[in-house]
Image (cartoon, rainbow, N blue to C red; front, side):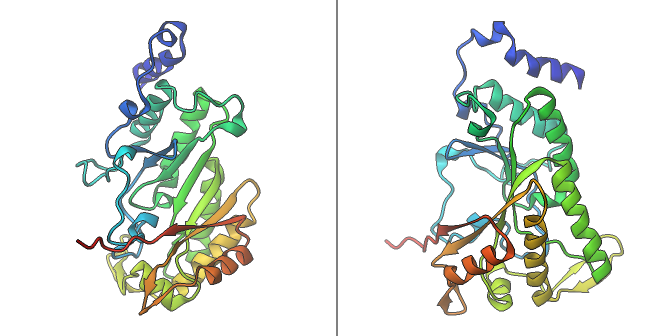
Length: 280
């Protein structure tokens, strides 16, 4: 609303600037914003396509992994929140900037910016992210946006699959997403399916019909989308895997995943450590 915008913009006026800034953590909105390594993350959904258990990197980090308490992370469900609107997301981000988030950045290249992440897959809400990016850039020119995703885009037919992937590519550009971090836990279809917990079937929301999942095709489509995003001007692709991830009685080779990721055109490959259950 106009009233909301005027209040948020007051954070930049001289009167407000003379008031001591709140700590960054005091500016967090539970269930929506959280901080990791001094970077602002924003949760937009808890949903993830075709997955029974895994929706983000931290779901694969092992039974002993916990998000740092100081991050302020909580899922939307844990916070009893619905999927936030573009207005709610924008105001939550602006609240952090009013608390001097990224205040030390002298130029655009020094900004940490905003990462759309959280429990679910932000690709499911690209239209909302576009609205958020437009509103933020009206007030704060040059803020970089990134997205963490599974890269899973699934449609019943090849033609619909191509159309869905094209919508993703257009959506990334429209939402001004400069970098995409894709969760790629394995280098083979079987290991990928086991690691991600792919469902055997799902209900098509447009028809109500139950559709079987071709798990090999899902893996192939993820790889294909990584390649397409890597070829898209203005979008950098990074792939992330989990070091020491047990799948099918063995550990996934992150060297194989790295070779696959870089071969698909990713500009970087990163690993996170697997954390086993704590023993007394």
